[in-house]
Image (cartoon, rainbow, N blue to C red; front, side):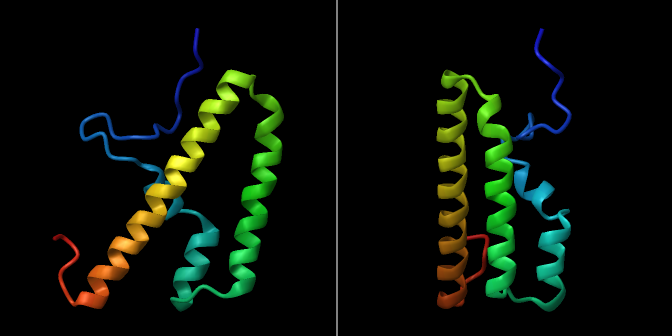
Length: 99
């Protein structure tokens, strides 16, 4: 029997990812929001946290699950980069963010 999901990855009603909401609650993210800028040192610390977690999780995964999780991580990264580019292009164009 599968383990229960404690924090769902997406909203069942809308199919929208929930990871951004969880990320907004991280101390590391809120520390950046405090001064509204991302310093190089903050970015390096976040990268270190990511790599540390990857090293913890990687050996726990069976090969088929490992491949799926790798694909998931790549798709999430792509989604985040695309979202950032979209918001930046809207800001540069002076349009509203909902278009």
